[in-house]
Image 1 (tube, helix red, strand yellow):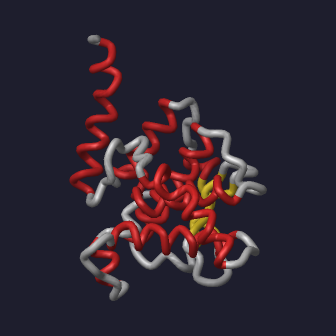
Image 2: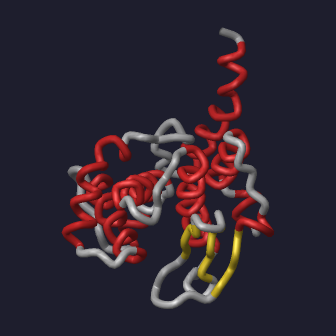
Amino acid sequence: MQSVSEDPYVKLLLDAMKHSGCAVNKERHFSCEDCNGNVSGGFDASVSQIVLCQNNICNQAHMNRVVTHELIHAFDHCRAHVDWFTNVRHLACSEVRAANLSGDCSLLNEIFRLHFGLKQHHQTCVRDRAIRSILAVRNISREVAQKAVDEVFESCFNDHEPFGRIPHNKTYARYAHRDFQNRDRYYSNI
């Protein structure tokens, strides 16, 4: 799995999960499957496994984004007591974080989708993608999904762990990974 060894987003998330006591084993925690519809991947909290939809992932960059998005859910599952199945606000928060931090809403991706604007565009993209992700996994109305996203948006959009910032591109992700690796060194000198 090329993503795991080379992508700076993935490297940081794997290190953060290990640091949080949730080490990831590629053979155990990743599954490649054919999926229905146009879903690219998912996080199955009941077995702590990331599913990659091999029939819907078109290239390495797409796979990197999917793995990153799903690892953010796995990280949230590891560090917080997420009630994935009955609390739509918990799901909404993790979807906001994943859309915000994974590169889903990068300017380049949005231009490829022919979606772009100047004012508050990143926030709008994060909201829209979080709502779409919730609707893909829950049988609820768009209004209920939107209400859940609205209720958690401010705090979850501003939760940048483990990156410490929104990594708008791989360079920022590399900086975030370096900072994460040096985090303990800094605090041990205080």
